[in-house]
Structure formats: C-alpha cells, structure tokens
Image (cartoon, rainbow over all chains, first blue to last red; front, side, top):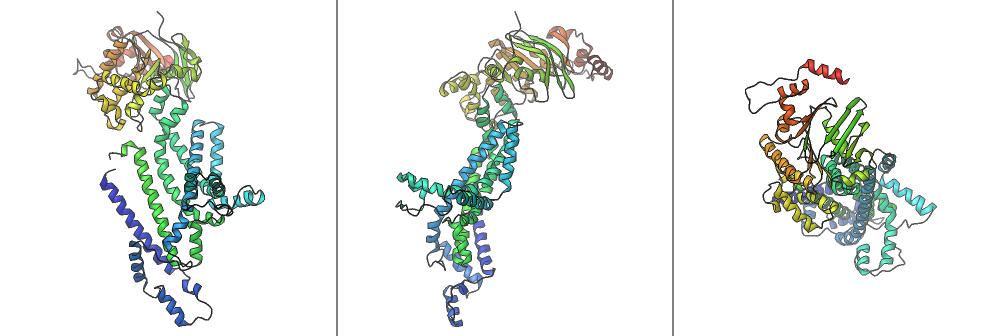
Amino acid sequence: MPFSLILSRALSALVTLFGVMVVVFVLVRVAPGDPISMMIAPGATDADIAALRAHYGLDLPVWQQFWIWFGQVLHGNLGTSISMKQGVITIIGQRLPATLELAIFALAMAVVWGGFIALVSTAWRGAWVERLIDNFNGIMLAVPDFIWGLAFVLVLGVLAPVLPISGRSDPSIDAGLTTQFYILEGLLRGKFAFVWDVLKHMLLPACALAFPLAAVIGRVLKNTMMDVMVQDYITLARIKGLSSLRILLQEALRNAAVPALALTGVQFTFLIGGTVITERIFSYPGIGNLAIDAVINRDLPLIQGLVLTFGIIFITVNMLVDALTVWLNPRLRHA
Amino acid sequence: MSPVIDIRNLSARTAAGPILRDVSLPVNAGEVMALVGESGAGKSTIAKAVLGILPAGIKVTGGNIFFEGADLLALTPAGLRELLGVRIALIPQDPLTSLNPARRIGDQLTDGLRLRAGMNFRAAWDKALGLLNDVHIREPEQVLKRYPHELSGGMRQRVLIAQAFSLNPHVIIADEPTTALDVTVQKQVLRLIRDMQRERKTTLLFVTHDLGVVAQICDRMTVLYGGKVLEQGATAEILRNPRSPYTKALLAASPRYDQPEQSLKPVPEALIAELKREIGA
C-alpha cells in the first residue's frame, strides 16, 4: 500500500476517535444520573456536595471539562475512576486482556466453523447436505448472542452442569502469572492444565459470541463461493484434472474470501460489542462486564475510558481488515 | 488407422428439445478438425461433452465418444479426471476470465507439471520458463511471477496455450480461442497454435464460427446446424466446392481478405426455414 494511503487512513482514524470522544463525553453528561449523588453520605450538606463536585471538576461547563479531559488523554492519562479510586488506564489494562482473549477465541471459532459449513455446503451444492446446512444456519443466524448465552447457562450450567458458567478460571488454581493474558502466558510457560481450565471457562461465552458470527460468515462465504464456482477459471481447473478439494481450497476460496472478509470485519466489531452483555451473563471479568458496572455507578471517567478503548479496538480491526483485503486481492496491491 | 477421437451418433437434449442430433465426428491423429457453425449449432456442446463438463440441463440421449478406444461417456468422473489435462487439454475461449485472478501465472502454469506429472517446484518452474519461450513470451522469468491482471489479453491467451500443451496431450480442444482477442493478435495466436500443433503432432479439435480461421489452420472441417452435421470433409475441398447450400450461404456471409469490395450476404431466410424443417426443429 502506498504511504499516502496509509497516512490518510491513519488521519481518518484519528478524526473518528475524536468524534467518538466528543459524543461519549457529551452523552454521559446529558444522560440522567449524577455520579455525586451516588457518592454522598446521607445528611451531607449542600456545601459538601458542591465541594465534591468541584473536586471532580464537574462544576465547570461541559466544553471546559472536555478540553481538560482531552488534554489529559493526549498525555496518556484517562483520569481516575470515581467508583474504584484507581487510575482508569490501570483498571482497563487489567481487564482488557480477558476480553481480547475471549473475542479472538470466539472469532477463531466463528471463522473455522463458518468457513467449514461454507465449504461443505459448496462441495455438496444442490444436494440435501446443502439444504440441511442452510436451514441449520438460518437458526444460528436468527438467535442473538445473549439468548445463546442464557440458554447455555440454563442447559449446560444448571440442568446438566458440564462446563463452568462463571468467571475466567478456577479461583483455587494459582498459576502465578504476571500478565492478564492467561492463555498466551500460560501456553508460553507450559502451564497447560491452567490453560485448559481457562479454555473451559471461556468455551460457553465464546460459543454464545461465535454462533451468530459463524452463521453470517457461513452464509456470505457460501454465496461468494457459489459465484466463484461458476467462473471460467474453475472450469479450466477441472479440465486440468485438479481434485475437487484442491479446486475448492486453492482456486475458489481465496477469491471468495475477499468479499466475505470485509463483512467479517464489520461483524467482528459487533461481536466485541456483544461481549458487554455476554461477559455479564457469565460473570466474566473483562471490559464488557466492567462497562456495565461503570454505567451503574455513573463512573464518568471509567465510561469515557472504556468507550475510547472500544473505539480504538473497532478502528484497529477495520484497518487490519483493509490490510488483509489488499493482501488477498492482488489487483489492489498496486492500485 | 483409427481416429483418436471418434464421436459416434451422439445425441443430446435439453428440456426445450434436442441440441445434438446423431452427430458423428472422427478426428484423426495429428490433424486439425474444425467444428463450424453459428451460435446454437451445438459445436460448444460437443466440446463440453468430450471434456465431461456439460451443464446440468443437458442430457446425452445416445451415442459414444471414443478416445483412443475408450468411451469417455462411460467413464467415472475419477476415470475422466485421469485423462483431463494429461491426455486431453483445453485452450479456452476467454483468456480474461480463464486464469485465476488470485494466483501467479507461474503457479497456475505449473499445476499440471507438479500435480499430474509429479515434478518438484523447481523443475516445474524451469519447464514453465521453456513453455513461455515456446509461446514467444518475452521475459518469462518476470511473467511467471505476475498476476493475470498484469498481462494483456494476447499474453494471457499465450499462457493458456502453453498450459494446454504443457503435458503434451494427445488431443487439444480449442474453443474459439481467438474470438476474445484483437484482430491483429488473432492472427499471431492462430499461427502459434498451428505451429505448436504441427511440431508436437497434437490432434486439435478447433471450435469456431469463423470460416477465415478455418481456412487458415484446419485440415478438415465439420459444418453443423441445429445440432446436425451438414457437411464433413477436407477444408480445401469444402471451401472450394461446398455441397450443402448452408455452407454456400455461410461462405457468402463471410468477409474475404482477397475480395474486400464484395458485399456480404446474410444467410437467406428461406434456406433457414428449409434447414429447420429438414432437421425437425
């Protein structure tokens, strides 16, 4: 990709982030609910309340508050959480790895499962296998992530308790890790029993997040595969005597993946949004769960920090998708 | 000597009606046989039947396609796949859509060499360089590393010709290989196909609607109308002295380089009506 294109993408990403900051800052202040009223003890005087308000800078006009916060963010300071009395960056830094590992695990499941059903139904197109998968996929597509989550808790956690439905790992295991990247660090340190326990805790929330995405990937990839399978170069590959599997994977998949990839990127940001509810359902200690606590407590600096974090994740995902699209499609490389 | 490809009494139909009527077509070793006719005459259907890629809507209702003694129509898909690419190859019609846009020329050109002839990557790549030389592509090292969209239509057709000849097949089917090309490039590509065919003694089944092309490179020709063979024989003989009134009309409708001032005559309506009656369409 030419440098100017990268530069313009980066600039537009910064503009987007600034827009996100303005919107969330104004929104949390316009929304009903007051952080100070959550903090004061019964019997506090008006003077106490005013002092507290001034302490957090909430007595200033909104635009002035924004510029103070904006200046802090530029210096890498997201402020202090009102409810947890800790630096926002510290809190998010502790919780973000849990969400990243969950989201990436769910994405991997969705890509593998969605890709698998797309390839199988393309290989058996026109047969009962295709219709079966289409119908099955329709159900997966229609049910949202939080319904899957609740159903899993009920069926696999309560009725037939085969998998853990709460938390990130068994609290009785102390793996002695230094980072919050449990899977990554656990694998690097060879603590496989611990990683296995983390994966078991992750499986149900990841499935809840992955199922709708897998269905979308499966459907879109199958449609683009069908379009590709009637192209002349596929017919020629058949006449070259290449095997069906090779035609599917080597000739068709790469061409079909390009349009499917763009949609997967968009849908993955929905999946990250879905972590908010799903983490809550499974008491999973990530930033999604944290976001709900922050909203309940009217913890303005924490809400702002979290929304900014989600914004950065969304923008990063979109840029990665752009780069992957260019890599997969040689016609774009020199454009 | 028995023909390399011997199509006997081949009939096929779609839901709408018959599209091949009792077609017999022997192609002898080392010759170039033209299949001539307008759109819908059934020439592409014959080519597809030989390659086993008939669309789902077309059913063969009778006849055989013998290739070196074995009936292609009786083979299993796996049995046919053994022959395709190695003994029977195709030069496709449209070079712009027949190469995979996501794969390098070298990778596509060496598929057959690596997967069918069992060459390792290095040997196949070297062989591909030689093949590109054979089809007169300059700087073959660079071309092998390029993607299809970086080559012109003529270059791509040369690559596809190299690909078709790469495993020295006994038969190559050329499906209107020059219709998608500029007129100037057409002549070069035709000459190239003819030269390679002669050098390697490949049997060529050449599908075309262009009598000029037929005159230029084909030893024998078969004229089709409505899925029926109207005339079959040596090209020079038929062009000089056509027996079928339809062939005569086709010749009158074709431009001639030696008589540019002569105006073209469409095939008369009355003749078409008569032909349709004759074949029962």
